[in-house]
Length: 314
Image 1: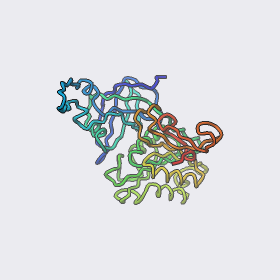
Image 2: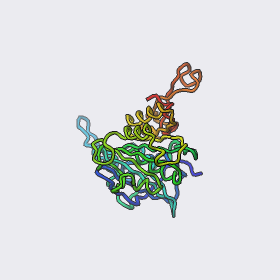
Image 3: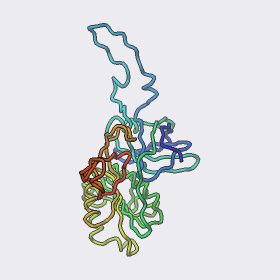
Image 4: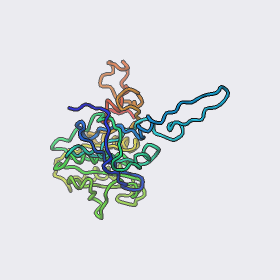
């Protein structure tokens, strides 16, 4: 097995999916095995340009120094950013799919990349989703930039009973290929998985939160209309934290197992910076860490990002 490491990938494609989202396809001759739920850290700036752009300064006491280095004169994302894998293809090398939304300088830089550009990545990082048992119905719930890992997971569920739920604020912020049949979303339909979409403003699909659509699906016992009877549901989710908390509550209240791809700001992705702490329940309060407490901190990057919903203390 090839270990996690820093490598340089080539941009194979960079396609605008909707108003703010792009699909960045990275090509490499080889890459370590990956699974749905894992992520990579991407350098969202030109590292070679930064290395080359250093200046010596002559300073006269009592005068100010005029900054000349790029990192001092321009808004640059100096720290790598974490991105969930949206897909992988192994044929004459490896292609990795990254779907991101432009929200700042780092993602703006990624949006401007063109085929042939070099991108420094670190990975793969984190743990992965556990696939459902043969008698389970996989329910994939993604919101906004939490949709990409659901796409990768769907690619591993071909032939298994599954349904996808995807939500966004409005139609032009859905990073998916839509069709006249709202249940046939290309990214999921390719694997035989129907999709239910929701927008907050009702501009496409269900009007309201995707969690409301999920509740109706579960409480109205709609699954038997689409899938064989006797299947036990299992939920997978990623997206904005309020959405995931609600999905977790829905699952716990109905005694449905649920795996959450937690989102936290990460500087390193390897457990060094300790910036992505998340509170979880301890199975044995007497044991370390924090002896005597029924909770402790874990790191989203190395202990996760996938956690059981019932273990999380948001």
